[in-house]
Amino acid sequence: MADEENLGLNEEEAADGADKKKKKGGSVKMAGLIPMLLKWGAIGIGAIILIVTVVIVTMRIMRGNASAQAVVPISQEYQGRREVLDWYQSIGTINSKTSDPIPASITVEPVLGYKQADKATSTEITSRQVEIKDFLRRYFAEKTAEDLKPYNEEKLAIEIRNSINDDILTTSKIRDVKFLKLDVVEQ
Image 1 (cartoon, rainbow, N blue to C red):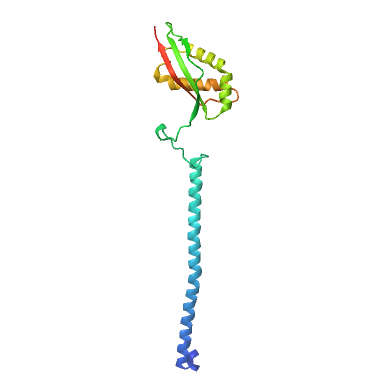
Image 2 (cartoon, helix red, strand yellow):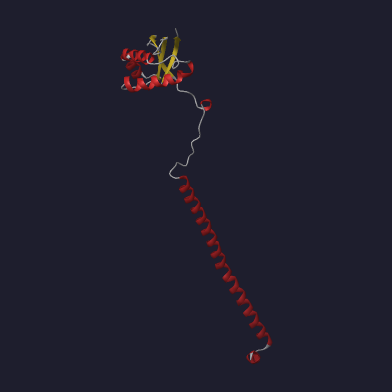
């Protein structure tokens, strides 16, 4: 039947018709390739977005509500500069006895550190000097000789600082307490 259709055509026309069919088929294949590439590209991009979203959500769930920044502990050796303080040295020497069964004599000369150039703190410490001396005398009278050993000085300084800030000073705060002298003479 195909032969019958070509009966009226010469051989050149028949060959041109076959070439046209091949060209049409070739362009149809090329035209189908571009949408297929776009489709697979979109699927790949969608998969990447889905994977990234799942990872982010999973990490947030595992981490909970904690902040994204981790806290790195820093030792005293590597901390920045310490704050420069002014020191109130007019408290003088305080003498007391320990609460031991055989009391030991205590001689203490504390100094109070406060923020540099803070006149309000200096004024308040001066106006409450009697209260501070009385507190320090009672504080050391309640301690034993063992409590006043050199390895406890930092703990004593923190306790004194917190007590003075909480119970005596009202408008200002001291930052540190140091001992120019801390002598415990046991009998």
